[in-house]
Length: 201
Image (cartoon, rainbow, N blue to C red; front, top):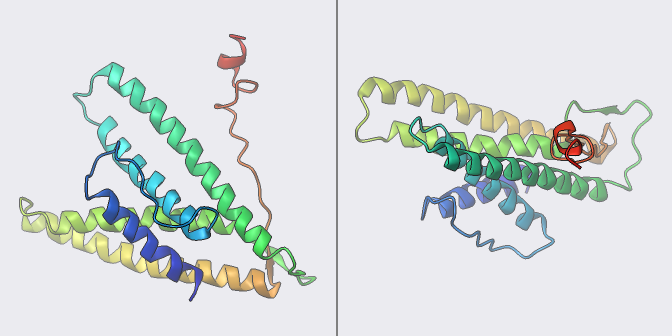
């Protein structure tokens, strides 16, 4: 089994689990044991799925401004949680391939494996929600046809991205590529680097 053959069904599982209630306040019920990659993948996509719906809600033109501010804070936290999970998954890969000696001509990839997996997680959400549009009972035939075209592209993209991720991991394992784990070092969440925050100390 390739890594994306593990990922993609877990992402579908998460999205289906979330939509049993379709509520951003639904507690996560991660079925996988802690400290396993399956657990981390489930949590990663759960964060992405909840945030997807946060982003829908905050775009309501009638939203109360006070509620919008609370929601913006939740989105900020979700973004930080998402970044933390990506770094955790990259640490998994780094540990897994730590004993691999890269070839002398090995190259580094434009993004780490976990950031590519992050894109795959978001792609699973796009596919689910585009398929919803294709199947909408109240939508026009023209709307459904346009969304079907988009869905076809997303499904092709999923195949291509899955293949690219698996190839990257195969290249790392064979020493043709090497990886580094870079912390994101986001400054706006840090009270020591955001001038608005440290000015108030």
